[in-house]
Length: 476
Image 1 (tube, rainbow, N blue to C red):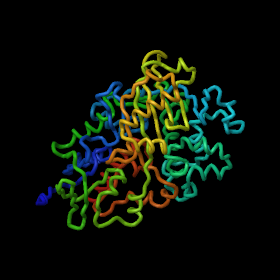
Image 2: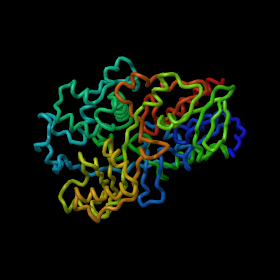
Image 3: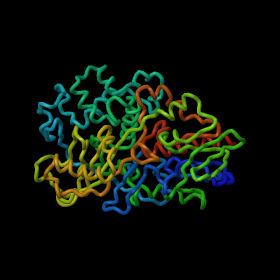
Image 4: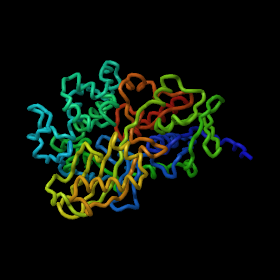
């Protein structure tokens, strides 16, 4: 016999998703006197902020980097008494494994596999895509990527590089690392926005001689920062301590875990949200603070306008999987190659983190992106972990027995996330980037995918602040 529907509970605002964006919005509204209910489908808060507290080295499985310009995140850490420390993740030098051949860092300029012409032969293989894109990036303001005058750049990196006459060999190399799934699937505008935001941060919040080029932005090489903040900081207590503190700030009972939302019904005088277990909640406003990969599986009545519906159902998400390692011995002293490596094989990158002694144990990572990550995701987690260790030992035999896998994380395989971050496909910035964040009746949209100017954790906080202001304005 079916269970009877439960009576609805009434709130001012229902927030779907207890990641940074949802929790920040909930905190801001709570502090303004709103009665807030947060519904989280997982058994923990934090979303893509997750610290593996029980493992050696306490690896961060998701977001953890706090830039010096992350004003909202820094303020939240200060408010909740969390300690910021300089990130200690300087990567040791990279060799490359391309077409089955090893090329040491100091051999790349003269290597026959180097496709660049004179003047560019010093561009390392793993930086080929970012360097070329940065060279062609005309953005000057943080919101330029949303300006129609730059719509001609809403194309793939392959198209952009072809337009500027780069050879097929250069394009192939650049396509191995373009901060997206691949060289064809992401709009140059969204990648240029990230690059420009990074340049803006470096220009305004650091000394030019305090940073160095790195595969994913800029590395910390000393402090020398205003207000005693490092170029990149981490939370001493673990990144997940921030969403936990934000959740604890709300009234007792404000957050319910393991609540998978099925439906948002806005036909009546208030919005009603129904969860998988039959519970119903009513509110004047609803905030969707989940990725579109999750929202597209929630029924919304009345339906979204065509452009917004297209965004929710088609916005792309990039795929990165990462294995967290302990390197028991510096095996690179045995094989004579650079410690870290970049590859066109199954393992896209192996990162060895400098322990500042050169001896003993080091932290390490195996990083898979795009197709390599997707193929890995076809395997059960245990099989993928085993394959990765076997593959590392195959390509770097000296590593056998000297590297231990702590854990393997795929955000693509996380059923309530389905991707490490959003990634506008070519044409999508022009098609719906501006329209997709507009409120739909009582429903408002947050999450890092709705960012306008920020990156990473700060983008999530930016979006939470925006929807809180929208709701306060609408209800005043």
